[in-house]
Amino acid sequence: MDANVPLAATASASPEPSPSTWHNLFASNCDTTRCPKLIHSSAFTETRGCNLVDDDLDTKCDYWKICLVGYIASRSPCFKALHNLIVTTWHYEASLTIHASSWLIFKFANDADKLNVLYRGHYLVYG
Image (cartoon, rainbow, N blue to C red; front, top):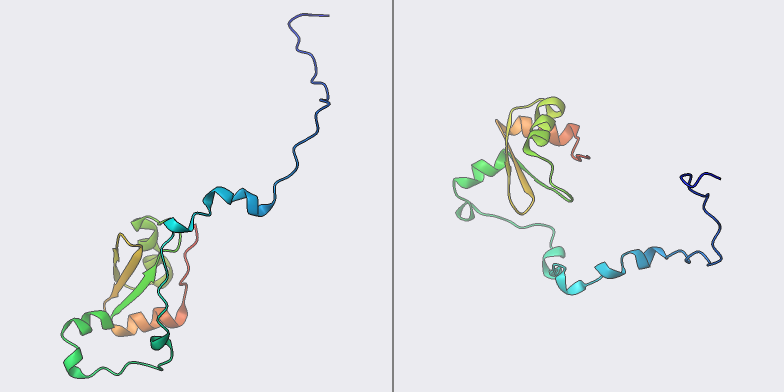
C-alpha cells in the first residue's frame, strides 16, 4: 500500500449529536432587555379619527400632502435600488429621503401622482 494515499474514513463508534430544536437555535438571542419597548396607547385606538382645524395646520401641511411615508423592515436597500423602484415601477417623478431610523419619504410632483401610486401599488420591495 502506498504511504501517500490517505485511508478512507472509518465509521465512528460515538453516536451522532441529537438534533437541536428550532427554539434552541435562537436561545442566545432571547435577551429582551436589549429590545425596543412598545408603548400601548389604547386611548388613541378607540377613536375613529382626529379632527384638525386650520389653526392646527401650517404651510408644512402642503408639503406632506404630496408625500408617502414608508418604512424599511429589514436590511436597508441602497438608495439606487429604491430610486429604480420609483422610475421603473411607479413611472412617476419623486424625490426620496432615507432617514437613519429606516423611514422613507417619497415626495411626488403632485397629489395625483401620489394617489396613482397608492392605487396601483407595488409597496413591498424584496431583495
